[in-house]
Amino acid sequence: MRLVVNMLRNKSLQVLIIIIGLVFIVNLSRNIFRLLQTTNQLKEAEQKVSQLEKETEALAKKKELYQSSSFIEEEARNKLNMVKEGETVVILPPNFGQVIEGKGNQAQKPLPNWRQWLNLFL
Image (cartoon, rainbow, N blue to C red; front, side, top):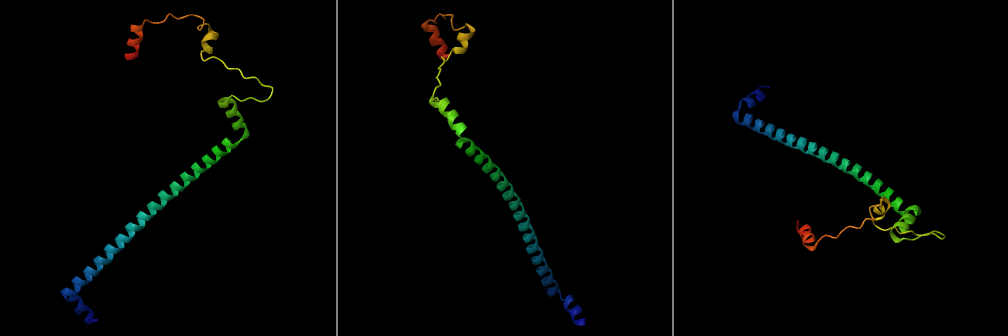
């Protein structure tokens, strides 16, 4: 017991014990900090995975819609002007709404050239 007390009274031994204690504290602090960073990275990765799963589900639904026969038929009718047997295609003029309201029947007086140029640049 006296030997331990005598050793603790030695200044160089006290400094050495303090230095070793500080090294342990610094290393422990670093490990705790790394653990916290890893936990945050794990949470971010889980959030990204859930977001990607939602996007995957949305894309699967879109794929299902685009591959359905009703969508293909609708696109063929709208974009390709295709019809089924016995149907007739009716193509309306672009100003059909104005014609129905009676506005299309009124002839508009064309603007003079100088006014058309002015409207073009202003």
